[in-house]
Image (cartoon, rainbow, N blue to C red; front, side, top):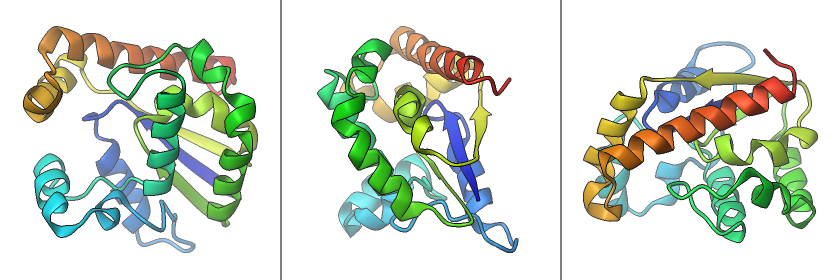
Length: 184
């Protein structure tokens, strides 16, 4: 069994990579999810969200995204207001069974998921993964920030300085995680 986890900040190319993994013509296929973000949206939302922000699709497993959002909310934050790592880690017992059940539900010979929020929550998932392979995506933080501002300026008031700092925080969390689990 192999588990591919794509870690990267929003707007850093993770959707392109997840699409490549999910659609690449190999045997066995890499299953990146049963219900993708686009599948869970109704037609009106899909046009406004999926097509506008990623015309080719996000290739995010909706159940992992929803679980990550619940974890971040329980820790007092969100994807754009990341709670501290300590607050997230304090929820390990609360979410352990749900994480384990989702991982077991998805597990096949070769599978994975992509959700940028996982950069913040991966510490909770790691103990439940068998043979994980982490693929880390990094993009210039100024380019990420410009893309975030274009996408989120009107919806959540994203501005450049905040977006740069947010991208740096996601990158810092990825690097901290992979250095601690010994994958670099």
